[in-house]
Length: 255
Image 1 (cartoon, rainbow, N blue to C red):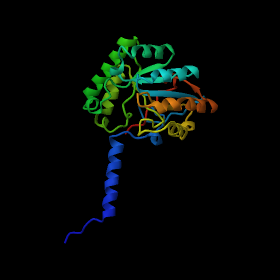
Image 2: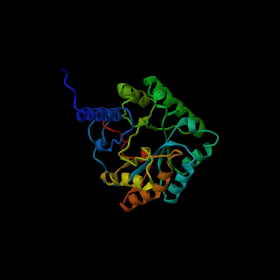
Image 3: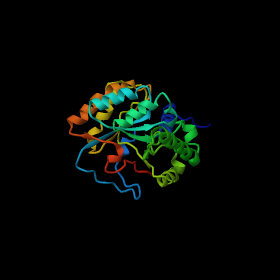
Image 4: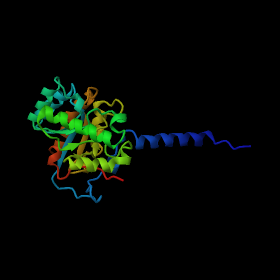
């Protein structure tokens, strides 16, 4: 007679497998493993004494971008926006123009942001980023210097060809940028107070924090949280800057 696996053990195995899948494929907060590293040899980099915060927004432009720009302007803050190429059109072009005029930086966040499409293989991701870069140049006259992988550079989708993509895009003058502080504002439906708490949990760990926030139509709570996040950093003695002003582009240590 075969032994039956106890229900409790079976349940634990199922939970473990689901958690492992989420880590390797889906979005996960990687701030616990975040550090400044030299991408060439994986050695940790000593952070400068001056404290400067680098706020970044993924997934724009959107109907909320103008409100975000109003808050940044009011507080004398510049940020970096990783834009989705196919969202730059006749309706959003004036907003992107203002974004640049206000002194913010533009990066590429792919053209389509469709996981199954962009992460199908190395060529698919490369071509999608090139299309995003072309769209940004055509609409702004600016060549983006940085890009951000949807779900970050450690996501499981891209692991088989990550090094190849990074190398190919580096030859085009593009550097990828990750983050070490996250508002977790694209996970579920957090309210403003939760987003603020998520940022506060890690904000003082770094002299040069790179903060991940999102600029999509569904991120109204992010807009509500932004003034408090800025105030929190100012009260802690931080200045603000754009990614290319950082001592080194922030990248996770990769396997």
